[in-house]
Length: 616
Image (cartoon, rainbow, N blue to C red; front, top):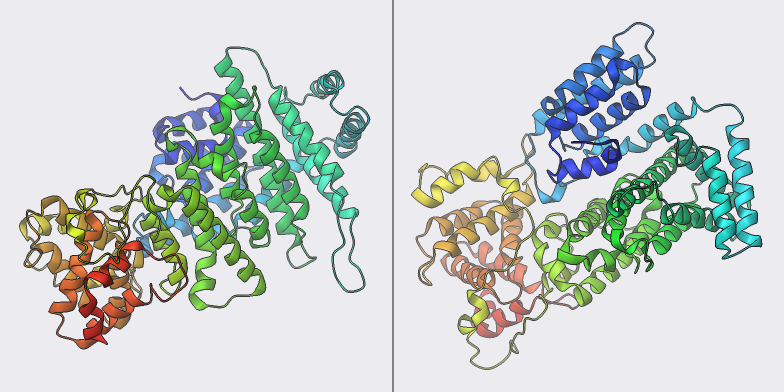
């Protein structure tokens, strides 16, 4: 049963993505809640939810058939206030469907949760439209009323700091004005409050004669953040402990949802007009991250829920959506009160959120890194990214190791050092002998028999060829599969190799080979035939394929052992010297960059010294 408490767009999208809510039930529920066009709140929610769910490929059009039909029905009525919003939505859905049919991109970890480029670039515009649509329904004197409430709170906060009795009296005043009771009044208070405190902070600073920004005074933002924290901490609408916890999570989700929408709208309105200052928004979110994740008897039981809501909010305002917020965003997601707590959550339940946020970061930086066009801002962001990864490899190496495939999917081939950091991660508790030990027998190590844990979606990018691939690996049928393989590894409609698909193909084939390998003989197997076929790509395609193989030379495991043998086999069987040179290049360039280096590369070259020498 879907209740109103669960019906928040950001949370629902996460639940649908995780298959924790049936999309069919949700479709019926939203349709019924629109009350045949009589409930404006649900109509606006449905427009936003359908747009996000479909354009971000969380749900298909036919899965929301009832909701879309009801929206069409409402939009077609003469005199309806929703004719233009519904018409615009249908145009976006049709254009999104056409793009999907043309590209036919299969799902993969590299674009999991990622909007289409058009959807991302239009996100701030849609947020501005949503804020404007909502603000039109504000009663007169709304800003004056909210200003009065905020000024009253600031007096309480500054004159009686830490006075719980005074805080409680003020919270009662808010309730008298409908905050926390009325959905409309609550939304209006937080939206207008956010706008007012940001405006107040910006007025405290100016630009000097040299064009440099002066210091801002954040006392108003700090006071407002404290108010939000108190509201969430003391939220108690009655009921069992689980119900109170759900109420607090729902309120936080509402506040953060309003905050990020207001942030996006503010950013959109500043385009082409003035310099957009990220500092007030960063200070507000930073205060909330710090205060709501600090140890607290009231909030500790819902700590994972709080982290999840923040993760969802940060995903919405990722750098690809708001480039001007990128540096603040990176500092927020890597903050000591957020990222470590997320990764330390019981049962590793926070890993998927942390993984998605890092994917968001890499996707934003990928075009700049690929072209090696780094402005000062991108250089600073890159240095920050390296620091975050070095923190992760030191404190949470298993996280990087388990998601290595999806991270490598969104890191360009020319970023050897960045990729090395990912591949150098060794899970906790694993020891490895000195790779330069004389007569070291890698194949006798007990770890060589163990399969590494892979949390990335290996099979996702192979959806279009997996059926034929499995048949060929099991039965060598269809017999022409290998001959027709290479064209299937290009992006549909483009003369460009689909790197994530190649990465997944290499790892998937290796995993299948290991599961059925009876001895160390890898020649004349269907798996090696597929991998050998990749060497028939042009120079760029071979480089991508060899990198895909080398990405699995990490810590001692069955994967490292198998792909080491594959590398040697491809080198020894190559009839083209160009292949041998590329094999050597792929391995050697990973050792000549700054540390860290994948430990198996040292072992590889120490065990096979003639391998490199013969190529040189």
